[in-house]
Image 1 (cartoon, rainbow, N blue to C red):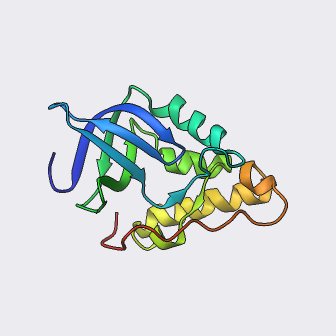
Image 2: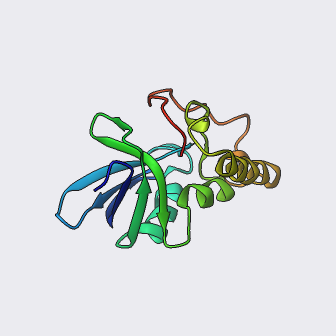
Length: 148
């Protein structure tokens, strides 16, 4: 693993915005998808978010651009599964929302795509946006450093 990129297979999906990647050497890395917050277990649409990530990522090769950011043992980075950005797909499906605390860490181009996806999900009232009122804001638990 280099300082900026982690590559490996997705060993398992823990939640709608967290998965575990195992590298060639067998080391396991919990990874949080940078820029989004998905509902957790037991929350409305939490299972749907996890299920979408399982369908897209489980057992597949992943590239994580992470730039050295960690919260404890968790790597926070932009995840690519083949040509797919699962965070973007979760936003389009209305199964995640932009995490304002991490938005500044995204590249301007990626942030624009994420904002567009969230806006479209809101307008179509998909997933969390179909609930009465606004979904709760994600907790500000991750450090702010660099752009991805």
